[in-house]
Length: 124
Image 1: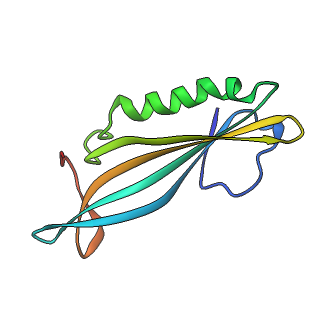
Image 2: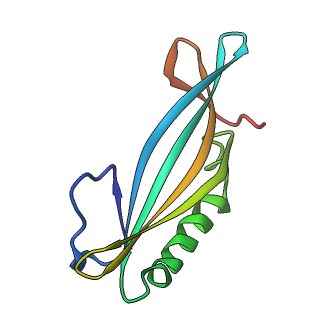
C-alpha cells in the first residue's frame, strides 16, 4: 500500500491500493493556565479497486487501524488517538472502486498563543 499526504490528484488504477492522510478539522477547548486541548479530525481514505472492492480494501483498512491503535499516544506526542468512524463509498469506475474514509480524533495539548508548542506526554 502506498500512503500519500493530502493528495488531490486522482488515483490511477495501476497504483493499486492507496491511503491518503489528510487533516479535516481542528477544534479547541480552553483548559486553563493558558493551555488548549486541541482535537484534530484526521481522515485516512483507503482507495481500492476490484470485483469486490471492499474485500480488496479490507487488509489495508485493518493495517491502518492496527498501526494507529498500536500506540494511541504516538510515543507520547499526543494525548490520545480515538477511532471515530468509518464510511464506505462505492463507485463505478474503470473497475468497481471503494473509498473507505476512516476518521480518527487526535487529541493534543498546546499553549493558547502558540500552536507549535505541543505539550508531550499529556494523558487524558
